[in-house]
View 1 (cartoon, rainbow, N blue to C red):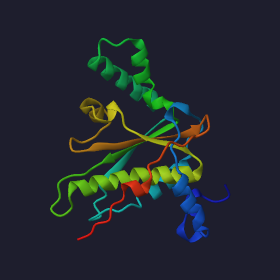
View 2: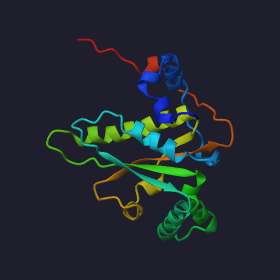
View 3: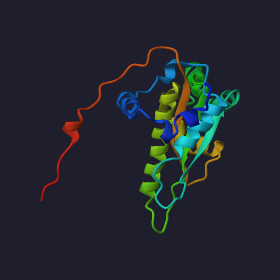
View 4: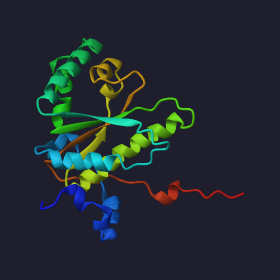
Length: 205
């Protein structure tokens, strides 16, 4: 690219709004089981984070933060996952341990979105958690626009207290999602979507 991704996505440069609408109408996730190198460049990652934080945030609390897993650190964290899995399921064999060990190595980069929602005198925790979910969705949309394969996932390690402690989370913090980022190694297919009209009701007095 001759310009940064962030500049190319600046509002004043989105002259053809139909492109943005088409992106939203056709966005779909890549399979984490079929991701490969390359992952996002440092410039792309910086742009992703810049876009990620442009979400509704009642009270300007910034109730989220990020943890990036990339390079050899993915494998080192995988050793912690395998050890914890063995502790939880000592009856499982090497195949399951290998799966846990390689959990974060399925994509070149894994970005954890951490919800920092906490009691507040005015802002409900639920609204803070929804803001973290919006951060995850912004990342997916921006990554798709950049041509980066992406998937929002959680799985067991997002809820295990020992794993969360190993990640450096505070007791009140939660994982809103692990965003896997890489290059799809096979075509990204769509899945059936619900018919919006079947989900809509109109309130009447």
